[in-house]
Length: 115
Image (cartoon, rainbow, N blue to C red; front, top):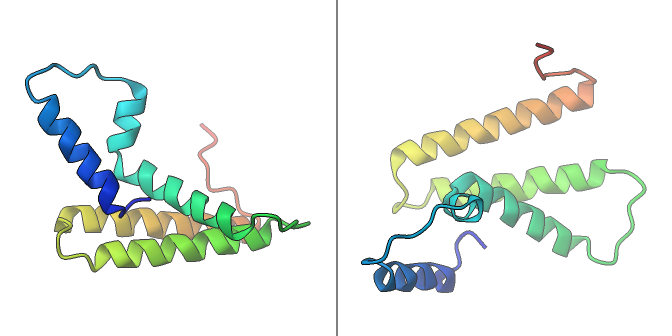
């Protein structure tokens, strides 16, 4: 998950071991270092674990759970003093866009560009 200490320790140990080696840039390495990717992955993982073995006829429940879990993770990240303020602004901007898209979807609006 996003805030797992063991994952951070693993990444730090990898960084020190490979400091002298050139690391190839791959799609996986780019995604693994992306804060937004890790956030979304963690949100989806938590929601999947919450709904394990539960059948839903409507996706609205899963959407609401996803938004709730995302907001809780983002608020905890926002209150983390070790996180840079510019990242906090980006995270809240992402959250605002996500909420707007969800509200627009509920209203039946199409927020995507038709270009």
